[in-house]
Each structure stands twice: as C-alpha cells, then as structure tokens.
Amino acid sequence: MSSRAATRVFQGVEEQIATGQLKDGAKLDEASLAERFEVSRTPVREALLQLVGSGLATQIPKRGCFVKAPSLRDMVEMFEVMSELEGMCARLAARRISDQQLAELKAANAGCEDAIKANDSDLYYHKNVDFHECIYIACGNSFLANETRSLRRRLQSFRRLQLRVRGRMPQSLGEHFEIVNAIESGDADQADRISRQHVMIQGERFHDLLVHMEQGV
Amino acid sequence: MSSRAATRVFQGVEEQIATGQLKDGAKLDEASLAERFEVSRTPVREALLQLVGSGLATQIPKRGCFVKAPSLRDMVEMFEVMSELEGMCARLAARRISDQQLAELKAANAGCEDAIKANDSDLYYHKNVDFHECIYIACGNSFLANETRSLRRRLQSFRRLQLRVRGRMPQSLGEHFEIVNAIESGDADQADRISRQHVMIQGERFHDLLVHMEQGV
DNA sequence: GTAGAAATTATCGTATACAAAAATAAGATG
DNA sequence: CATCTTATTTTTGTATACGATAATTTCTAC
Image (tube, rainbow over all chains, first blue to last red):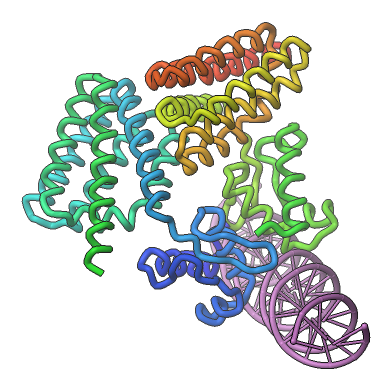
C-alpha cells in the first residue's frame, strides 16, 4: 500500500526523527506536513498511520499526532530483544544451514574483512548487513527473519553511529568468525551465545556513546 | 489514528478472515468493502493499510489487495518465535519480578485452576491470558511485552480452538505451576525452558488439530 | 485464426470539500 | 472577580471527484 507521495512523507518524517530535527513530543500537524512536502492531507494521513504503526509517533484522539522518539530505556529494551532474536537466528541457522548458504555466509564475512582492510566503515556497514542477512535466510524461519530485519531497521540509524566507535570493527569481525565457526560445526548453543553477545556489546557501546554525547553537551 | 469507520472496517475484515468467511487469496475490493460497510473508500483504504501492516493482507501494485491467510508453515514459524519470546519473558521475569507481581501471578494461576475445576474452557482461556499478561509485565521490558502480546494476538483465534483439545487444560495448568515455581525461585533457565515447551506443545497440538481437520474433510 | 496494436475499462493515488467534534476563547451573570 | 455558558476556531474524520496508470478487451491486419 505504498503510495508514492505517502511513502515520501513517511520516509521524510522518519529521517527527521532519526537526525533529531524532529524532537520527541513535536507535533506532526497534518496541514503543516502537507505544505512542507507539497502534497495534500490524504497522503500525509497515510504516512502518519504508518508512523504510528511502526511506533515512531503517537496519536492522541482529538489532540493530534506527536513524535515519539525512543527513550534510552526504549533503546535498551529493543537491544535486549534484538540480541535474543539474533541469537535465535544463529541457533536455528546452526541446525539448518545448507552448504551453499554457508558458503555465502563465509563470502559475506570475507567482504567484512576486506572492508576493514580498506578501513572503510561505510562499506563495513553494508557488508555487515549482508553477513547478518545470510544468517536470517539460513535460519529457515521467514517470519523470524522478517521480525529481526524489522527490528534491525529500527536500531539501524543509531547502529551506523555506533560502528564508528574506536576499535569496534575488528572486534566485531572477530565475533563474526566465531559465529561462522559455531554455525559451521553445528554448535547451536555456541552460535546463539556469541550472537547474543555480539548484539549486546553493540547495545552497551551505544549506551556508552549516548552518555558520552550527553556529557559533550 | 483509529477513526471510527476505518476501525470498524478493519475489525470486520479481520473477523471475517479469522472465521474463514474471507478465504486466502480473496480479493479485498475497495469499492465492494465501502458498499458492504456503508462507508466511503477513504476509511476502507485506511483499514487495508493496517491489514497489510499487520500481515493479514497483501497489496499487489495495480492488481488489488488480497487476503493473506497464514499457511501451516507460517503458523509453525510464528509458534517457533512465540515460544522464544515467551521463554524470554519468563527468563527475565525470574530475575526481575517484584513481590507484588509474584502475588498477582499466583492469583492469576489460581484463577486458571478455578476455571478448570468449573470445567469452563472459555473462562480458562481468559484466565490464561491474565496469567501470561502477569509475566509480560514482570519481565520489565515493555517493548518485549508489546511484541509478545502482538504475536499472541495473531495466534489467538487458533489458540482458542486449540485449548479445547482433550486433556490439554490440566496439562497446561501443570506447566503454569512449574513456571511459577521457577520464577519464584529465580531459576531463569528453568523458567525459560518450561515456557518454551509450554508454547511449543500448543504449537504442536495445533498442528495435530489442523491435520485432523484436514483428514476430517 | 492468430498476433499485435489501439481503445476501453477498472482501479489506484491524490486533491479538495464538507461535516462533526472538541478545545479554546470570549462574554455574561452571579 | 470568578465561574459558567456560549460562540468561535481549529482539527479531525469522511465523502466525493478527478487524473493517471495499468490491465483487459476488442479490432484490425496479416
């Protein structure tokens, strides 16, 4: 149901929330948004519906629609769930991965390694997504894969920031190798454990970063 | 963003999908639905957006909107994820539950027991929901709680059917007691394990039921 | 009779207009 | 001066209308 204009508004507002231009509690006025994006209220309303649906906004019955930026607590909670889901994907992948999928996983990880050698954090970001995507597919549960992708997407903008933290990329790669080994040897528990850690470390690093930024201000 | 008419249409279609009046692949024509619910296309479109968003329908660009009833495979996948989420809730609850929350959990379970004594499966259904709700709240992660509730809701209509399977209610209650004990003693691993089983058994029973129904036809 | 092209039809996305409901502001009365 | 009532304004929800695009059907040519 992705109409062109509605999608533009949705992504535009989403972007502005992520970059902090639209702060928590800011009113999402239909008329203003319509004017700002040069569309009518109809696609704006569709966009707001989707924003509310994906938890980025709240609707108060006759008061309007407001930005609902995730609090630090929300972020911590989402990372907690993300680590569980990633762990589950890895655990199932260890049991279900095919030879071809394993080869693709290794190739994706090699891509991550190359990105680090080139010291290209943007490239690493994308190769890292590829790596995890391989695991999602190999877990053999497309519902789980979708849920995990969806949550990853919500944490994405913050994560991109996070990966630039000093020394994280090589450590992350090391964890990748451990995950690949565990999956290859069919050690589901190990794959689960390392993957959970892999995400939780990112969550904690993210938390550090937030505190750091707050101190900076 | 819950407009009166749009919500009515959404719930109406949802209901008809659950009851099987609208079968998989049935076309959700905007004009027909508008006529059927005696509203204009605008609220119908909003309802369809939400249906697509919650996975009950698919939108094919210029072909229309179609009912997407979950396949058996989808159901198995959802149960697999549900058991993980329930396990996670129980695990966290074992670590984080307060005295008052524990008391409420025990009370809810007592309600389940009463329902069984009264041999009232509808009552049991509701008391069972209360029981699990206590755990969701006690897990201390409201994002997780919402995700789990949401998935529970999607499996709900099938689950109501499932609980009527012979001998399931007493067994289910037995599992409840085990979960309560594990949570009370702070045994997170045990709470996790039993809760996973608790859901997976329901998933398997559901599978049995489906096969049985197919054979019946 | 078949294949390709053109026309028609259906449906989707967006705009605009209107009505109802509620919040706020203003005025009157005690 | 305060409070209650009323009026105005803002905003939301719904209806309808219009334009564009794709699918289907029909017509023509080979």
